[in-house]
Amino acid sequence: MQIEQPQRRRRLVSLTPLIDVVFILLIFFMLASTFVDQHIFSVDAPAQDTAATQEDDVQPLRIRVDEDGYRVDEQLLDRDAVMEKLHDLAADEDEPRVQVLAVAEAPVRAVIKLIDWSAGAGIEDVAVIREE
Image (tube, rainbow, N blue to C red; front, side):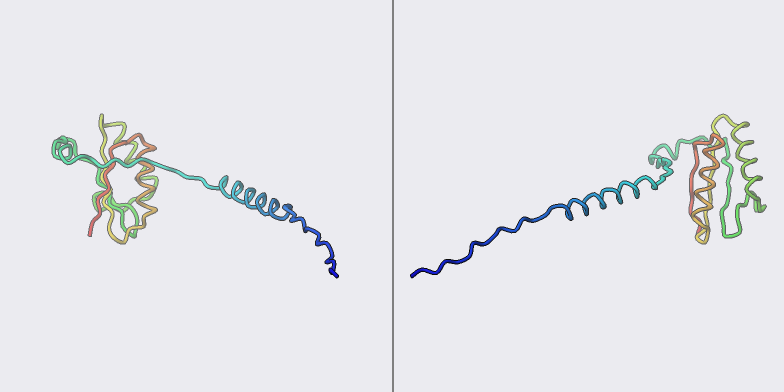
């Protein structure tokens, strides 16, 4: 005599929760990527031989950045005075040059602002030098 076993019903796996999770992740990453706002500026390092051949006749404008702010010839300047000097330099010189002398305690934001202001004034030759 043979005992008959009840027929097992195959359970169907629902893909609806998996699809919901995938769509939620897709929407999350799409929304997160639209809020990224990158301001990129290019920094070119000069070649070894071009640094020695630059003209020494034109003295660059040296702006020192420290924890107190911006200094030109040891005189503390505010944002408007620095921007005025940069615009005057761009108007007076054919190839204006700026050297940013950043001390170790200088805020990085202040150095980047100065590079941005120089670019806004039309000055492309900006060198950043770290002072100890």
